[in-house]
Image (cartoon, rainbow, N blue to C red; front, side, top):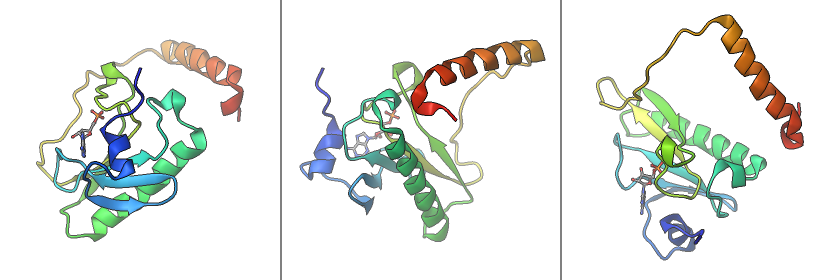
Length: 146
Ligand code: AMP
């Protein structure tokens, strides 16, 4: 499968982008279809189609740059009373561009952005069971041992 997307073209400079920030590892630019004005995407410069393909150190850097962009949004001319981070990993999660990207979304009251969900109220035993399953998986993954 071709690992290159429109974001590879943006990184290469062969497609246009309104850049916010750039360093050796990370690029941040304006989303072309913002869900609120000032919506920014933060991407790694290396191709990683999914979180599983992304070097965790680079994932940390994406978050760091996202934090800085969030602070900059609050300090800029963008209307910004709050910020949401959003990352879609996989088709079912809503991923459309298969190059990992962190959405940094400035929020104002009544801006219309939201996540639809149906929260439930599971018993503690069910939470404990799933925590054990997830924790067991984490401890089998040496890269994420604490
Ligand atoms: P996702 O659904 O999380 O994969 O989001 C993909 C995002 O990329 C969407 O918000 C798109 O509007 C945005 N997008 C797609 N192409 C471009 C582009 N050429 N420049 C900026 N943003 C883009």
